[in-house]
Image (cartoon, rainbow, N blue to C red):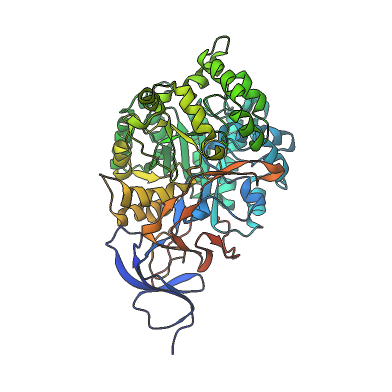
Length: 583
């Protein structure tokens, strides 16, 4: 008797997520799971012709910030446009639970400052029908979505919940505080938190400029929280640190002790600092040695420069600090564009730009120097170019044309009706190429991450990392390309296993039917665009993709050619998911 199949994907070239060589095969799906891979004689209620296309597992994004959006929106865009079928949020120690009513504004200010999500949107969009972390999970569980989500317990929220003003003021936790954090950590993981995240970087500040509450947490505090996960018997740890408290060796030694004592896996952010271009190698070497010693520590890395998008649509530009620009910065886009096109305004703004930063505060001067570092600012272009040659920088363009770099930047801001962007890398681009990034991607103890989907909505659009990883590194790069099977493995099974999600990330019988069908020749990232679709009309940069002909979550097609089908099979994943039993 023929099997009752919901769907059969026919004749695609399968990159199964294991790193094995690509092969042509059919994929049979029933009840949300893959039931056969190979030659499938039975028919499905839906048949997808994948001949000439690549078929991959759905992508697992381990570093997003949909903590607010997931409470009011069923579509985790832009990530769901880029083949992501499982997203881990609550990274960098920021989030919205646990929370006491009097601390809600504080958590919004922290998220707005650290992750550039408009506070007005958060104030309007968050229902706050929770206080404890388990209650927050229940609120997430009530909404269907276009992908699965996993939530981490954020240190900033936990610390303020337990310590109140003392926690926000960076005071050391007492033994009683740590005991309570340990209990709440165990409670959160038992209820379904996939892990815990913390931040130890000065770059993370509230919108008022205050440091993140977790900045100076002691080893005893971090250890207590990690031991809470050990008490629960599961969970992962995520960390971002400057690794200078007081130095990288001392900080990493603490990380090793926490992982050794708790037995929980940990991932941390890794990038190339332009001030110390080879420093990432030292940290990665320490990670490699820790793994040789049996400690599960991974580095989250990015597939392209880490930086900002500048322009008339974005939240920043080389002229943001200037008095004349500040007068128009709050105007609607069309009015700002009209002002910038006015010759008298242009003359005044360029005069101010050429005058330098006299009288400005140190903080403004620092920002100004970065935003006018024209030797490291490039036209993004359409389609976007994230690996531009040094000769294309605004400084070099200005020299060739005999103009000032300010003039070049000004003209780029109003070109194409003000829709263009400039790319300002501040990490991963010290040598004006991505060769070092390629080494990070190929290292044995790294994970694909740091896309920050849902965050930095006025300054970046890096939720497109999965699409860029495959298209640039697997097809377009002039040298140093990586084979497609390996790239797919990096974005699927490697990330899934690191999060304890063993039921997905591989195309095999018994596994969850999260699948992408991709016209690889057309795969690519479109130019970012500004949308005003957040609560209270808040703005966010969105970046679409081309080439995804089908994205499937739990056996249901959620997107066809980038358009939503209306299916919302995604759910909150409560904790780790075991591998399916052998058939």
